[in-house]
Length: 124
Image (cartoon, rainbow, N blue to C red):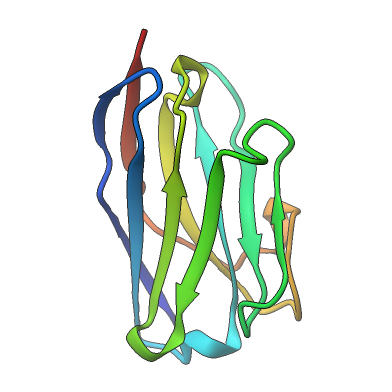
């Protein structure tokens, strides 16, 4: 069973950039489609970005398209989310997820494992 640990969250101001990372262990990282979701206070968790096993195919939520970039380094068992031009509405706990489905999974129920999350706070 793969285990995921997120890092890199923090407090930033509107317009700033931030990178969050996810380290994987205990499984074959390159066999999983990977993704990021987020949950803001009082709101449901939502899909943010996903990437296929080989990193060729990516998908983004409309709310982050053009501002966030997902990437993976299979040799290092690492998933990364680059976040540019952050907005207050991006404030949330960000979770890294692993899916056995082939390709990119945009549906959260297709993810088998989630990390504990890392807090991102964007002030106005």
